Amino acid sequence: MELTPISPTINLPIKSESVNIDIAPTSQYGKDYDVARITSIIVLQEPLETSQKFLLPKSEELWSPKLTTEDGTQLQFSLDGTNSGALEQLKQTLKEQSDKFLEDPSIDNRTLLTDLQNQVYQLSQYTTEEEVPAGTQLIKFSFAKPIKKNDVGEYVLKNLVPMASFSMQNGSKVHALIAMPFDPFISSDNVEGTWTNPDTNESSIMSETHLDSRTVLSAFWQKDPMLTIKYKY
Image (cartoon, rainbow, N blue to C red; front, side, top):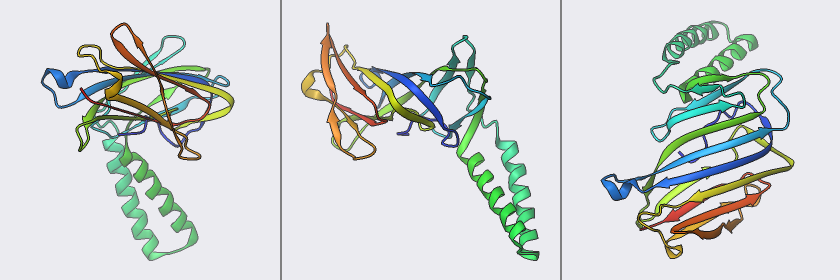
């Protein structure tokens, strides 16, 4: 899954966001993938006036998602299909409304039918939700995801910054730091990081440095780019 998993149905204005990605070389120890551990710390322009639903999509590539607010409250997501009962009930209601619309194709019945169809779609796409409490201004969201090889043998990580539900404000800032594995060491020749401007689709190379025996990529911007990291051992 390329997008950071947040519901697109809410729109929270952010003041700043820092993204830290630590890549574990699990492919060198018996797995066919590496693992990216991703942590985002988001500061909103203002505290939430009301609680907001925080939805997670169904995905086999979303592991151990956690959300923590500034007072230490941790919302531990469950990916066990907690909305399955509600989805089945909603599908039955949709069937009943469809039958009613066939009998009476009025505008009111069409509106109700469309609304139910949208609700079924949303519940079928998202597996669970948590309430972010009112008053929250700082959010820490973390999860892990596998990094798989492409057809030419490169490991490819893609991640959208900031989260899909958040909107960048004028003057808001985002910083990303990506730490490559150090055992085994990945040299500069074998890694490339880019970020793509969503408005122009123009790509820029991320800055690169070395900390002891580790290659580290970084970027700082005021947009919400797609990060792409390609590397090989």
